[in-house]
Length: 372
Image (tube, rainbow, N blue to C red; front, side, top):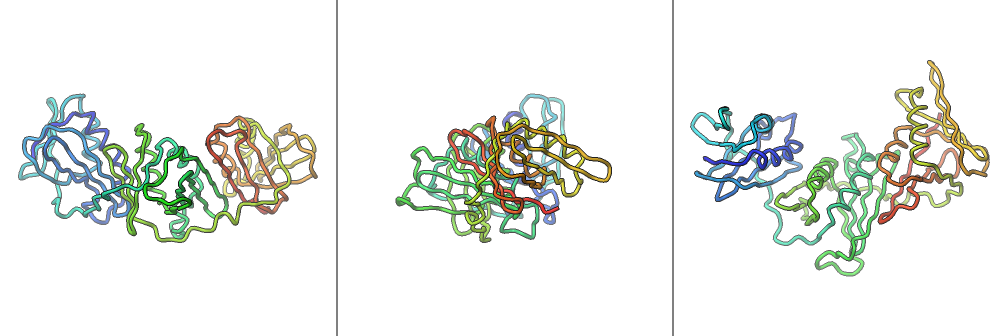
């Protein structure tokens, strides 16, 4: 293999591959990136056996070939090179990476040892608006469980309908659900009312958000029994299908919450951030005490206590509800509207947070109160 590629082009693709590469490799070749050079392009592949990414960039290829190179080391070398062309040349001792007056040699592993990935599908059944999908990921991924043992919650449920799409995530203590219209884009071959439901792994969602940050406007999506495929421009993200059964999320959305309080988002977020400084470090419990005309946010520990009063329109009964402060802040940090509404029934039932006057999407956040 012998080729020359622009540093900026190579660096952009290598940066996107870094999130895919397994940092705790038990199979050495998975710490490498597969490099294929042919024609006028350089193709790069990374996988951790669950999620894989294929990308490509233009290159001047003098000798075609394929090999695997340590992904992180190659990325760091290219990142620190001057802004010029990068030469990659394979020899018997490994692969040389050079530019300007810099020269390096890296050890390689056989390309034939690299896991084979599905090449994709012949026809992608859905076209998804990239900005909408990124918006949905930001508003739900924080609610995914961090417990690997609960694998059926270690991702989000993606629901595609002819006229809308939804993404929902839960960790058993809170649930985030966002729905956006599809602006007339209907799955090819889908009948009226047909619905597609797939579980998207947490890592897949994170990589999708990174790819969509590059500004691509469309995602071509399809899935088979074992894999999901997301074609974004010249890149293809491949994810192994999670066969777990996502909970019946609609059953936990309360229908009888009869109390409603509107808050200025920034005022509520600021009060919770300040008060939680004196909350228990493990539970992060803060209390909201509702009285006519006000909501008092409080927290207390052995070292002290804090309180802040917010003036609100509330005429219901005196009521105190305790929440994990970070759960509330996670929601407030991704909401763009100036006002949010809290709907509740009592101190023990699920509460719901929603943005007020959100345009172009429906968003609700269910959170369980704490018992203290």
